Length: 144
Image (tube, rainbow, N blue to C red):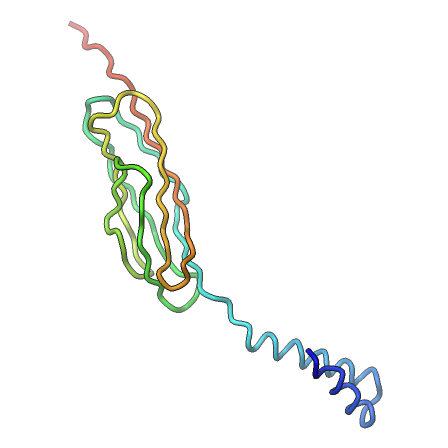
């Protein structure tokens, strides 16, 4: 603060030097804290989801995500997945809210698949990432 030195010089004439400095530093801290307001941040929990299914069987159950703001003001958000087998419902909303995530294993062969869902705040432009994995296990032969 450029005015801190000027304040100390003027108050030194009226108060003992140590008291003037203490008062100046306390005021500087109070003013900074009064005007410093943390911007709300978008948060999504849990940070990862895991799905498991058998090749050719039905899709695994949907899982839920909670989307919220760290501040008192609501944030608008939208979601984008990096894989076509991941669906997010809804694709957009306002905090606080929830979203359902499903994994569509139709046409996928046995193996482990990974994807990322990016949740982006329309106001802040910041992202939160949710990692998604889908394990498709091979079918076991039917005994006759």
